[in-house]
Length: 439
Image 1: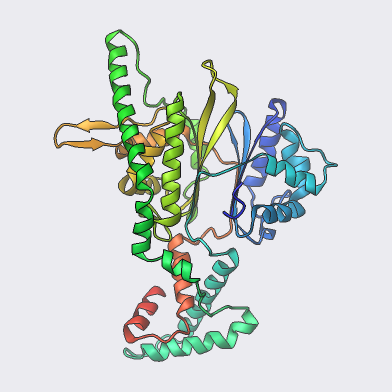
Image 2: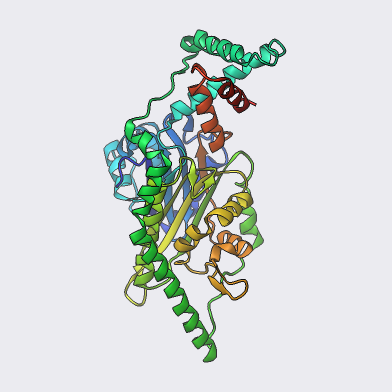
């Protein structure tokens, strides 16, 4: 367990005879996050995101992102929702929780079924729910001042406007519980934010990244040759994906594109063979390392708009005929904008990352070597096929909670910068830039 990564993933089998009962409870919670009778999410003061989703197995997956350690989160979560967890949710699982189980037993139960995240990305590391709320309130107060002072300042009065806003905020800071002082990151954080350090740390992963990429390419060429050989012998090759019913797709669309933020749950089988398991672990390690040390804050491989994302390897309990355990790759994402735009941005800016991870799974669009113009076409470069593949393996999410549904990653960073420079001594150009952030 990574106890300081602000993330928890729990996976528990569901009793087949209790499946429908559990589904009804989760649907009741999910359809009325704010006023459902089972759980008051507003009391989870340090939680950014939380979800429950039933994945094929059937299994109950739980994931949350928060500001404290895993154990502190669980103790607070159990204190607030222990009755619901025992009597309405995990009583349907295997092994079941009982109404008489203590809070300590419940915490231990969830920890026993917790999985590590080999690739975990945070869009705004170090920024707590409290600080995000504070920055949003500061922004609202500044906007209120600007609305009242409209027309009072002429061009060239930017410095005076900035100074007056600073005094306005200071006069209200105590009563409104506003924090105005900019955070002072440690020297280590300041060093890690420099481009030179990010590039230097990124280079350290190349001894693992390059062999992994070459091995994936080599394995792909072997598979192409094997498929051609099977075709020559009259064997059928595996289709890229198979179409499923409109009803399932319509159900997925119910939970998408109705607010600034969105969610995605995705589950797909790994291709058989020990080599695929090893390669996906290496790929997840490489991209997880780069996400932590090399990528700029708020950007996953150049993509802005992802709040939290993680990939998790799930080991099935039932072994395959060959004797090896079958693995699946589970993906959770909390992101900004529409499903189409999100995946389109992934294709445009991170196709190599998606391909090196998901090419190890069943049905992912194959890499192709184009003769003219000569280039290697990655699986994720084939946008329509990639999006269709994602839809086929996307899982309906029964319960999804977000603390700040109307704040994008860009909004969160923008509000932080506005608050941090509200009282700072700025040059004329810096004041003008600060005012542009408010527009």
